[in-house]
Image 1 (cartoon, one colour):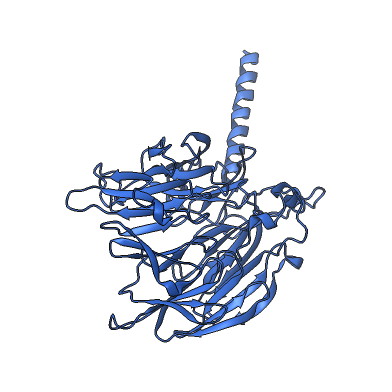
Image 2 (tube, rainbow, N blue to C red):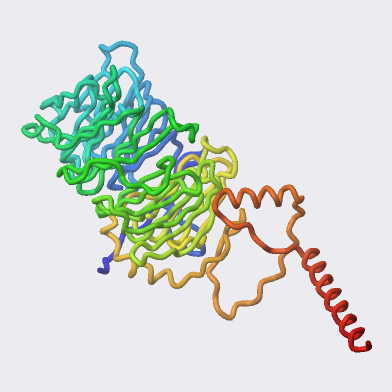
Length: 515
């Protein structure tokens, strides 16, 4: 279905001088257009719906912008600021301040429209499990926070009422609110006094919280990652143990479990290869999920909502999976300590579209319309080779820019429903042919018919035999095949040997006829 006047694909770029906004692809003349001149700041964050942009300008100043018009709409002066977060629809800004005594309430919830403080609380420290302190569903209809042995729920429309009801869970250490809709909350209780760890799912409605709707216990569990699907009916649980009793992994042991809110499934996801669970992601529909798992070369599989395997994506040096917002394309990648291989798949057609590399990538994400895939090498994770790469849906390189220091790159969030069907959107891209982009510093370009022959390439730099052997061993380890190309000298010697063999064969033939 065609969509009239879809929004532009904007990109936020933050370097040492501050942040700026680009008008996203396609670029005119191959270069992005600047929509907002550089603004000095320490960090930035879009609201999940893309309507607001929050920028921390200093240790005491927060600015909120209308992300559509890029106009400043609110500023907050917050002394001793340590962290800030913006709610999914941009209605609230949450701040965490340095505090010396419990009498000083250092967590404050501000209303963006009025600039007023609507809720305050004390929080001793800030961890990944406890920040943001107040969590919202995607539509901001549900709001709750973690406290000692309980989850506290608020009236999301009127925080002046304070805590309206409590969910008591003894020993709770972390929780995850389902986002769309915010109808359930998953809680994690770690091991204690010989009792196994467990994950329980409760309804967010007060009258339905007497018993969990689903529960799963785990032995040898240090921490968990909780992944809700769209529709809030399925929960993937990556269970992490610090110790691998088989001694096969230095990093401990991971298992992938699955729970449903209707009780139709409870248990392990049937993975076909032993080893760690590297990454999992739900499709935008919430009906399928992709998992990358196993010792290298890792395996990638698509499962349905009942854990039945639908498609095998093969094996390779992968630890990352990214499903595009339309649910059509999938990127498998090997980032971090892996060499940056990427494979692009069309899930609808069940076929591989292309493969390339993006070495040293720190972040990666599809554009909201599902046409482009962007990777970035950023500081402080990596201090060298910082830059941005944007690829087409089939892996061909579209844009590349390098930086001395790059700290953040993000697409401006937009609902994928605002864009047309992916097949219609791709008509403007045209047919693209993927070239080899595995060599560092090279990009792929679309090949046009009747183009001029390419200029002869310079001879490759000398590589000692030990380096060639090491490259071959590395390729074998990652499930690849080393290239079989010969150097010019080797090719010359090969032809020389063939001529000598032909000459000897001819002499032997003439000698035999003479006798």
